[in-house]
Structure formats: C-alpha cells, structure tokens
Length: 516
Image (cartoon, rainbow, N blue to C red; front, side, top):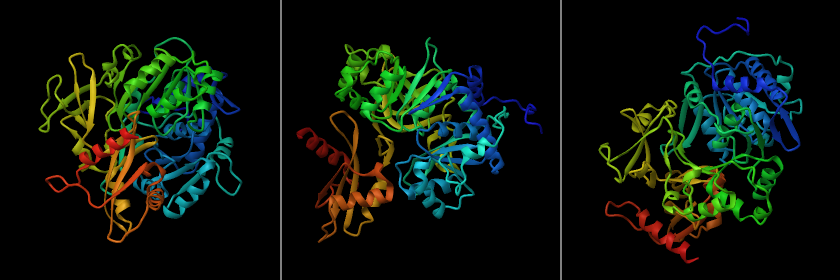
C-alpha cells in the first residue's frame, strides 16, 4: 500500500496529533538540550525517518520497543517513531539493576532495545542476558554498532501514516511486585487520545524537563509539544542548574517530586534567581509537607499544582493553584479534587461505598484507568473489580469533594525515581548468609519524604555490617532500593498473628528521626 493511502479504519493517535502540531510551525524551537536547538520541522523529520528505519529493521504494530535512554531529543523522537508504527513502548528507569532490567525486557517480549550512548555498557550486558533481536543506539555510533539516528538519516522524512489502532497497547510501565513476576501496566492508544493533553491559558509554553522522561515528565513533554510549546531538557536534577534554566530559558511549566521542590527552595541561589516566568509548578508522586508547600507558594507565587495519580489509574485528583492558600493549611494536606472525567469512591473492606469522612480504600473510575497488567489476568482481576480500579491507598473525601490520603494498603515505599517494594528488598537482605530475618519499612523524614529503612536480625555469630548489606542491595536491585538506614536488633517484634510488627518498628524509627 502507498504510504499516503488512508487506512481503512481511520484513527489519529496522540503521536500523529503531536506531529501535526509540529508541522504547523516547522521553524519554531521545539527542543533544547544543552547547546542544541531543535526546530519543530527537524523533530518531525527525525520522527518519520526513525519510524521508517525501525520498520526496515522489522518492527511493526503490536511489537514492543524498549527504551534505555536519558533526556535526549533522540529519546523523544524514538518514542514517537515507535508510536507511529503502533508499537508498545516500554521506557526503563536507568537506576534499576541489570537483573531487573533483564527481567523486564523478557517480560514484555522486547523486539528492539533503543539505547542512549551513555548506557552502551549496560545494553551490552543486557544483550548477553536476554535474546534481543535488535539493539540500536540513539546516536554516538562508532560504525561497529547499529545507530538509529544514522539509519534515519538515510530514510525519507515525508509523512508516514500512523499504524496504531485505539485498542493497541501504547505504553507499558512496570511497578515491580512481590510475586517474582514484574507487574506491567498497559494503556492503549485510544486512552492516550482521550486524555487530550494541553493547557487552556494564553501564552507560550516552555517546559523544563529535569526528571526522567520515563515518568511524569514524559507526559508533560508530550503535552507541551501537543500545545505547540518548547521542551527544555536537562540530563537530571541539580537545583542550581534548574534555577539557571528557569531564568535563562524563561520556563513556564515544571514538574518536580516534593523532595526536589524542597531542594530547589533551599538552594542558596533561589532568592537571586528570576523565576517570574513560572506559571505552573506541578508536584506529586509522594507525600508532601504542608509547611514546605506554604513556603513554596510564598517563594514562587500562586503557581503550585499538586497532581495525585497512579500508573494503574492515571490522573486522579488535582489541588489547584487557587487551593494552595497558606492561610488555609488544611487544604495543603489534601490531594485536591477529582480531575475532569474521574470518579472517586471510598469503600470499606466489603466494597461498600462509604459516606463523607469515612476512611477506606480509594477506588477510581475513568477513561485513564489501565486496561490491565501485561499477561497477568489474575492480578488484573484483583484490582479491577466491578468497573472500579482499587488503588490500594486509604483515604477519605470531605463534604467539599477534597480527597485526603492517609495510608496505603500496599506496603510500597515511594522514592525519587520510582517505587521500592518491601518484600522484594527483604528477600535480597535475607539472601545474605548472616541475615536471619529482616523488615523493611518507609519512614518519613522532616519533609515527609519517605526513606527506606531496614531492621535486620543477624544469624548467631554473624557480624555482617551496614555497608556490606547496602552493597548487596545495590548489586541486586539498584541504587533506588538502597536503604537510607539499617538497624540491627536481636529479634523483630511480632504482632498477635506472628507477623513482624512494622507499625511498632515504624514508630520507633520515627522517634529516632524526631530526636535527631
């Protein structure tokens, strides 16, 4: 079929919508990375060239493409190129161990691994562990390794019709899990179109991306380019560099996790930096401190926007800039109100909806909810019941519709860069021959950012120390899982049911944190 021929069942994916937006003003600045300034026309051409190159490598609709890449212009282009072909895109967190990366590559049946040159060595290691049909660099090739950028340069940059259909899997995001098989969350191309990213306010959108494109920053980048704006890419978060970029690039939109927001506020250059261009500073991903949020409003103005969501649920609620009122601290303890198109219910253990103020599990119904876990129908059925997604978070709704999260049913610790699952970490610690038992828990620090803590019982005569166990964790699970503190005890306290009493352990740890 000729490339310009319309498909029998027309469907315009979010990738095609973004490419159409790029085509409207090909000369405008779309991406900034260091000294590089990439125009909308250049980005659009690169996407189409990459898509054709991937197709020539045997990639097509329904196959999985995995990215191991940082915040490069080529990363964004590769995501769109794979999307144009109707592939499922899986973006790895770089901070995970090689074993975890290999498990994920196998799990999603990766057909091609697209690699940032900075991760060339990790990619070579993974290729030895997992049978991969294609490993392609995103630039920086030496001639001995296939380079997608070089292959794209040999292809046409003309319009290539999208192959995706609404029911096709668009993104696969891993959350880990405690069953030994990673939980991979699937969303479809139809769902992404239903989100319709964009902003209604006037003015140019210039978004700074300083956290991984594999997380919320990737969606923010998509929204910006869809809106006709510019994305400024930093390789990572460093508060001085972020402040400098906000001033130099006149940044209007920014996403940060709460601890990174605090670092930005606490940097000695914060008060000397012109941040008046900021119109939206979105934060989320973990608990935040109302006192620090009030200070952030005083520092940056009425621009804070809290986002509460989950990979399984998509966006759930938002605390708007108008609700970030230092004179109303009770609102700063909430997660805001339900987003448009989202229904929130709080249910008891039997699934009955609770009235206002009733504490129970937060359940969500919306077009953004995942279609399910990749090839795990039993796990899917556990969380998707009667049309509602069971989030595993405990909270309540007040009379005005504000949602407050008070705890989690899941024993999961939210950290910068992803999630730590306690049973997985306990399994690693318990694998040491001198560890008899361990308990892992999240303990909030003074800023309410959870830190990973472990309580360990040594075997009789064992003398394993904190640094040795940390090294074990880094090797097995990656730096993200490394405990901030390890405490050695003679025995773990137990509940009446015989389980480690993590509530008691957490209380003791909180007391120690408070005394420091």
